[in-house]
Image (cartoon, rainbow over all chains, first blue to last red; front, top):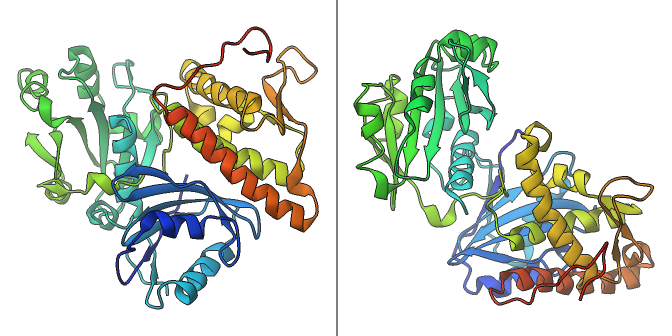
Amino acid sequence: MSGEPFNITFSRPIGDLESFLKAVFSGTEPFRLWGAPVAIGTNYFRVTALDLHVTNRITFEVARDFMRVYLPDGSCGNTIIRLYTNLQHYYDSQVSLTAGGGETLF
Amino acid sequence: MSLNLQLLNLFFGMCRGTHGLPLTLHNLGYIPELVEASFNNSEDRPVAPELIIASAQIHHTVILEWKSGANTEADQLQRYSRVIPADLITKAYVHRSKCETHDVAVIGRDEHRLTIPIGIANPGYPFPVLVTTPQGMEIIHNTFSSAPTDAAFRPLVINWDTLPTTFFPLDSDSALWEFAEHAIPYVLEDMVGGSPRILLDELGRRMVPLWSRMRPDYRGLLKTKIQEVMNHAAQSEFGTHLQRGTARGAIGAPHWDIINNPLVGAADKRQKAWKSMLKKHQALIDYYKNPVRQEMLELDEGEAV
């Protein structure tokens, strides 16, 4: 086991987290992420998802102001770029992507 | 989530660097070395810490043992007290540059802060004792021999509500809905790949980190839970796609045959199939989250009433 999760930080808290997750993980365009969000705390969800572009597994932990993204070994790095771009384009133009140690990637 | 999984995920997260957690251990160069592994001490007696973290940067190793109960075990503490750097190097395979010094740290729950230190204070062991608190974690007895490591826990501020859960998603205490949540995406991934069947052991290996290094009896507990949710899925929500195989058949191991695979069809049908699979997966999770669910009574090899 190695590596660290990516983190996506939103510029403002997500208003309706359940609706947001339903839209992002429906398996449809533009995100094409498939997964059943499960509540693991108050306003804190986990999604064991599949990226339907490449059918790779990818796990998310989502709170109102951030999203941790775990790419397993062997999965496609494009997944994270695609997700970041789609979130920036369709949800929050000021969204940021950082590595586990806090280094800003985008 | 059990205390074991909470703390494993917390320390992995802090060592790797994870948003929402303090970066102190990460910045000190700590990395997780061993999880749930056993090695012998200088008296050739076994110790089996939950986790060992070590840093080449500060040449220090921390052996972590956590206690969900109120008391420590005298014999276990005595065995930990006889661990020397040579044991860490030659038996636990920690690099010598990381264990010039080491500590054994015991972590308990806040409600046991009065009892946990007793077994450590009376024989005079130098082990730092920490407890989880609503705000994070703090040292309540002794100190780490590494000053920067000690400073990291005075106190350690954590938001328990948004702890990472994915480094170690499951253990034998995890609820069945969690096994259902994690198993199905692997099944669907295999279906997209055109696999004809899902093998229990292979599924477990992919769902649970360090599967092959676990004690067989512990792995058996996890297998039982995976098997239960997969059998239920094959009899209900995913009954049109999966069929329970028998361990006595040609495969010779517990498995589920994929009898209908809409995920490899034409694009428009696949889109519908994914939508349908999402509902089925959600229904399976909801079934196991329901505290008054109706259990299926198994008769023999896949029959149920």
